[in-house]
Image 1 (tube, one colour):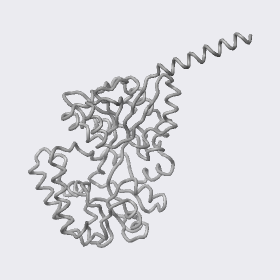
Image 2 (spheres, one colour; image 1 turned 60 degrees about the vertical axis):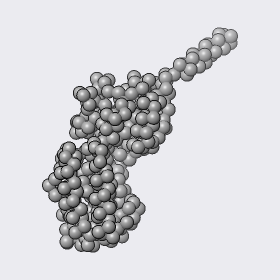
Image 3 (cartoon, rainbow, N blue to C red; image 1 turned 180 degrees about the vertical axis):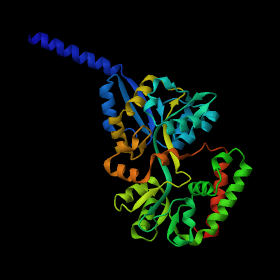
Image 4 (cartoon, one colour; image 1 turned 60 degrees about the horizontal axis):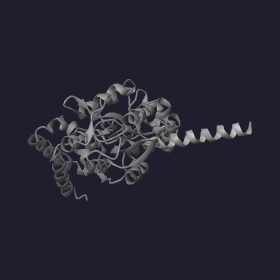
Length: 358
């Protein structure tokens, strides 16, 4: 019996060794917190023939890494939805996705359609949504109960009590508030320049309404919590954090729609583990795994009921901010054509010079 037990043990150990040696590696290029250890271990337990190797990055680095190798070195990447089309057209670093291998029925239709619209080339879809967030407004509803739109930052009744950050988000939001569609105007850069000029005039005239132009979440939070300002342009995450400290401070999706980013799943062109990549995508769409992922990222999963799968503290803040109608009204950041960022940068410099901000 002892000899038999020893033999069985040796055979089991040998089998495990062979399995480990033959394990497929899934190489993921993603954002920090998008592959938490607990979820990776859970996946590897479910699929013992797959090992996960994670490289954390950002949009610019992802494109640079894949461009340098022609799409090799990784099997799954997670760029934002507006950074795929141009990179694929110019560098050919991704391969089309087989949507029949993905449980897209679990995804929120709004986000799936938004990503497909941004990443379809010659009839082929190159990405699906994963996590999303927005830029918009926040207000202390005990002091600014009717605050609802980008233009309200310049309402005289809030003079000296509002704030904004002089980055491209405020240009886009103000353009929407003025009745323009800046993303549609990307197709006609002369028209877009005209919109930017009018936006610049509006924001320069607004300078006396602004208590201070914020540069980071900490200084914005300090102004809101101290009561120096009653409303501001903001990232949603900053507003959610403050809601946890003061439930009067809420994220406000602008009446024209919050500006939305979506981080996606894409397949690098020379990736070697497509089947493993599809398994990971479907795995993180499962509700119990969405909870683990959202607890790590702090963002909302692009799945049906994603808001309710957040950690309890953030779920309350998100539900206080967004109705289903607000989510339907999201304005997804559009693909950025060549020249647009330079145009926006020059407009921002013009505003900074006229307002005395740095």
